[in-house]
Length: 415
Image 1 (cartoon, rainbow, N blue to C red):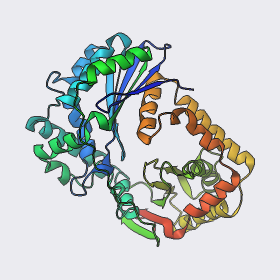
Image 2 (tube, helix red, strand yellow):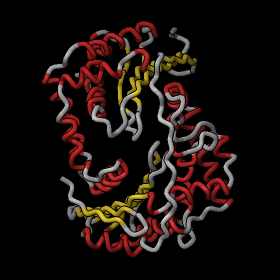
Image 3 (cartoon, rainbow, N blue to C red):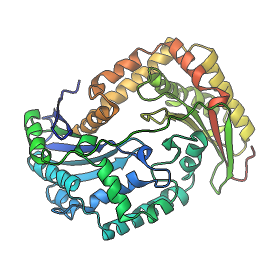
């Protein structure tokens, strides 16, 4: 159980405070409810670009990292399809340094031509290095637009193309900042060796005077049901051919969301899982095969990723995956198998709360989802799943017309 206090400032900023006196440190996590799903199709990659721009400093703290380091801390950030998260961990006695830095770059960020030019270059280099010049790096750049035709999840957080970043103007980024970087579009989580009352008081001191922004429009067109299978075959210079399947699955608040998560553990959660045992150990077709869910706020994807052994054809790989998925759809799993994956999920949940930083980020994410108390109650949703739920949900997800397949050939395989 993670204890916390929650308060909303007059300007709309949600503040969550948690005390963990087992550490001398505190973590400050500022989460903005903006990700790649909020971008315009002709201006993608902006949420990720802003993750970099915000480390360009502010009017009163032009060297953000230097102030963090002088306070004995470290900082980082990450961007998802749904939100952008910034966090600082430092000794508890220096917490006001973190709050000053966060409040100042929310109120007075250094958005100028030089900062923009530097961060544009950084993001373009990241795009090239991680997604274009790395084996298998372009998977999401290919699979997402294959699976999505309408929803903005159809592009990755890095964006569709580097052109959207290089042609961004100072006016473009300032407009994006004004629209999404406001107290009423953010959640501030503070945790560690600090009493909740003091954390809330400090948040009031450093953030209460920042003006409320306009409420961002969130008119996002939902993805229509997929009515026919889709596929794309590409040729790449990679060590092994691979196959990637994407199935549409329910959104984060749907009652079947947790069953989908458990299904991926049944399929590939360790060496005793179905796909690994049958396709890597018993009849070696793949060097590795995994499955996961995207975990998105809106309807997301359940993906299966398999890297073929040299002797395995794409046809054989496809058929083997189909056979295993059909078994899951037509036969109830055992209570033992379900209990095993539930125990694993619960263990991971407990381990994810071993540090103050992990708890603080989890609190902010739960608030972004819509209920900060999910940090304590979400595990119950997993416990309630039955074997018949698994069979029913698998049958609704693993339909041929609901599948988009990327065939990643390396010259030694055929579709």
